[in-house]
Structure formats: C-alpha cells, structure tokens
Image (cartoon, rainbow, N blue to C red; front, side, top):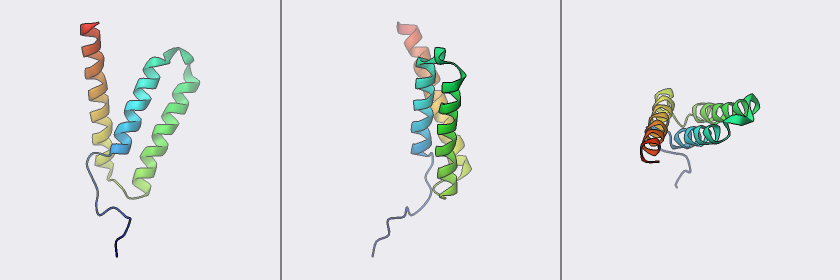
Length: 85
C-alpha cells in the first residue's frame, strides 16, 4: 500500500523558491503600485513559508536556502539584463 505523503524533506523548497521569485518579479514590475501590493505579496510569501513548515514538508533551513537561492538568481538575472540591454 502506497502513501501519498512525501518520504522526507528536500533542500531547497521548490514551493518557496517559486513564490519568492514570483514575488520579486511582480514587486519589480509593479513598484509604482505602492505599499498595498507589497503587503499582499509579503503576506502571500509568508503563507507559503508557514504552510511548508507547519505541514512538516520542510525544515527552516530548506526555507532559508530556497529564499537565498531565489534572491541570488533574481539579482544575477537583473545584473545580466542591465549589462546586455
């Protein structure tokens, strides 16, 4: 009998990586929208992060690693884009 539950933790969290990149891109594109959008984006990111930990799908280090990787990749892409455009 197979269980649908994950067998273990994974590093980094793909969900957190994805939501972090999405929040960074939307925040960058719509910076003129003001603090309301920033609050909504931050709340969405926080909901995903807390869900991954509360569901015991990831350790906090998985969350930190995914967030760091997303910020690094986003920053690198911004630098490359600025250099070539």
